[in-house]
Length: 275
Figure 1: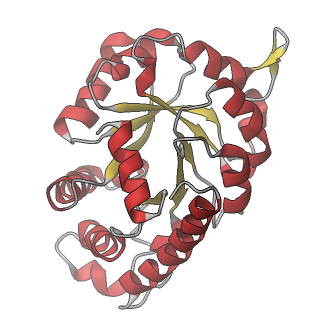
Figure 2 (figure 1 turned 180 degrees about the vertical axis):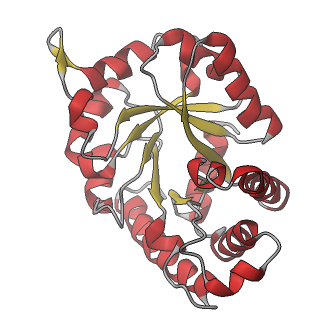
């Protein structure tokens, strides 16, 4: 999927919402546990109820790997269902991979070719040759961890290295990678005030922004500091949407929560005369 198509979808839906499919069998409604594949049953219901309100879904791969082969099969079915029934939706494998060249190529093939994701999150710590294999895939996107929303982000990401914060060096150096036009970046919503400086380095890149909702991030602040001329934002909410209810009406409750965010996003876009 091209960035231009993604922007078209954002304008059409008046939404830059990404919904995280972090499916935990300890939290899904109990009546689904009798299904042959309760993970997929839950995901399908959420997708069918919310697809018109969002432009992206982001399964966190750990929530599927934790259930072994059955979890991986549920992930495969989920992405296949999205690609067949809602091909306009941007899909993100939140896998946080990153390794030396040959290994990264295999990771890329797994997520881009076998599963059919449009993008994957990557940890940049091993540098150029761990990232460029992902960037080699046409119309696929590599989403580098830049400044994350967790408390431990301050352990390394904001440390000064040769007079500049490490996360800024990640942004600057990654722009020199081959096919860097396929890069996006993770910036946590709880770090919204950092977005001004981030935009000075990557003014046009899309930012995947987790942390709105359950983690306390502010949508208004993210838009104030992070929105670019081409919108440039995918704001993720996971638990705040998919676990809105544990009753039989869970899918509608999720849609109601997604609608609240979508309406806020619509207002932000209109206020900036983007739509």
